[in-house]
Image (cartoon, rainbow, N blue to C red; front, side):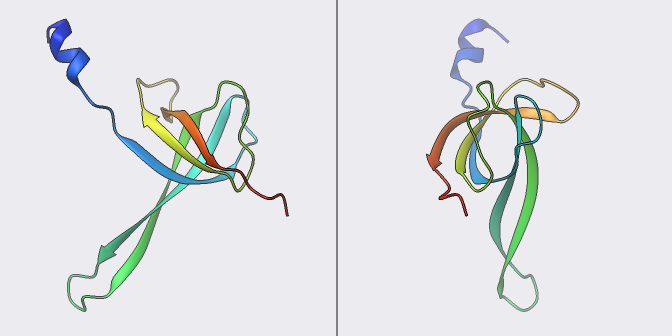
Length: 91
């Protein structure tokens, strides 16, 4: 790939809720999506957990964040924190 083609790639972005912030410079995010059941037609919530890089350790549990896909940073981290959309109220 030439450098012009690399510059045109649009990395994926997803939004989710932080479920763990125990890692150093890392967070775990739960991403939910709605999928239609193939037989019954009901919409069912499916979720997946992803690990993301948080350079400043700014996220806390319950925050709604947006992450962007990046190069692989460790065995499981291939996402990087882009923005914190909504801060948690701190229950």
